[in-house]
Length: 362
Length: 254
Image 1 (tube, one colour):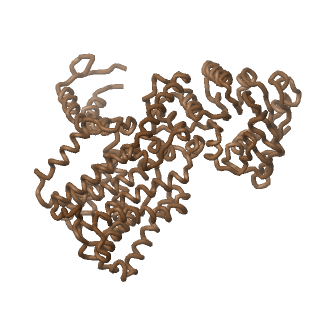
Image 2 (image 1 turned 180 degrees about the horizontal axis):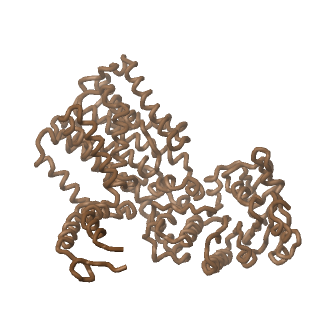
Image 3 (image 1 turned 180 degrees about the vertical axis):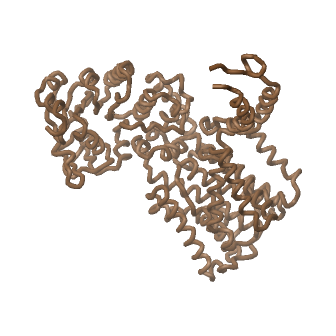
């Protein structure tokens, strides 16, 4: 067994490797740490970079893209909430669109019928979604895996049917129009730019909340429940209670997002809250990486943008969408937010290693 | 005074009797060993004590309180720590986080207060981290406190699981085959740790196959065979008991 190297040197060494290393170092400055989910530090230098980029982004984006970022931010809030439930606590929910819808309808009904201010409706939406989640979660969170997925799926469908049929309250299929802009103390968020700062401001606040949660006792509790329910119970964690509470919390996130959604689109109708959205949000969390907070947000931006771009391809959009998702899951099986550096090193050095493998005689 | 007392407990699965009128007492500050051939009902007894399963008849009481019908986490909150026969280390977390998870019941805070990082959460996390490192030092795992728990060796994971149970500061510690799969050197080290725990005043109940270790560290041994306790007493007396020898030699069908 003699290893043959092409130039007779013992160590294979190329200029390209130096370039790769330098490139990776640059990339690592802005991308999440490979061990991010295991370190769970609160704020790092690169967080300031992210926030700065978000602040400055509207300067380089055109109008429609800013609007797209507003939508992406709203979906990112739902994905962040679901990340706590799915990514951390390891429970599946295919009914999160319903909580999003509950938030949107609560805001729409309160502001148009009862002239409640959008800010108060914002809080009420989270509360409504949380209460629904509690009532639903108490019985169905005893289920696990596929059964839980089916039960939440059923809940989502029931919600849609109820919204369509109770016309006097929700306006049926056509929905509710004329939801006022979000406003705080007389300041109305009436342009895409203002809405952008509103939505991403809310998102940053929620990210801070989630980060606190993750680095504290409750974050460990969630991971423990996901890893082993028996072990979690053996240290005194009330598994059933924790599951219900994190479900309620993630529903409240979805409710907040729904409220913003109603204010931004100034309408609420059942088309937006179907199974498609539920699956999209689950996809965001899986693509972003389980047990990760930034990944789902990035995935939310990417998928919202992708859906918009592919809209131009008409009937080919869905196959292209599918192929892109499959490719992403092949090359980033842990999600884009988890061990991204390691994945990039793997991908960048892929061709080089392939050639080297071929050159070695065994 | 007995810390844990099990009174004439029975458990049957669809007519198969796993345990038949078993009574067992664990006195405070002692190490009790529970041995028996495979299928004798040791694990079943463990499940009943920790609340994973309910007995068909009989009662279990801990510190004079009836715990027969409590849920596993309620029993844990009363001060019963346990390890598992099959490793249940949380591989998605770091070593120190595994230990901190064990401190769950002793830390304050719910979802809201943790999310808002209220002052007492900060204080609690800080002292908990210090304490967790002390526990890791006791287990010789301090050098790896930042490691992902799934990257540890098997023996270290077993130690980590013990550490998670210790972090609860339990009154009674239940060890389910702690030495299974360890090398002789590791067993010796484990036995030394368990002995040190007893010196600190902990009460321990061990289920084990490793006879050497059991005879070495326990104060009292009970032998379970075919769902019944056939003998109970100091290790030396049990070792020479003809019924025990017969049970082990002839196996389950005796």
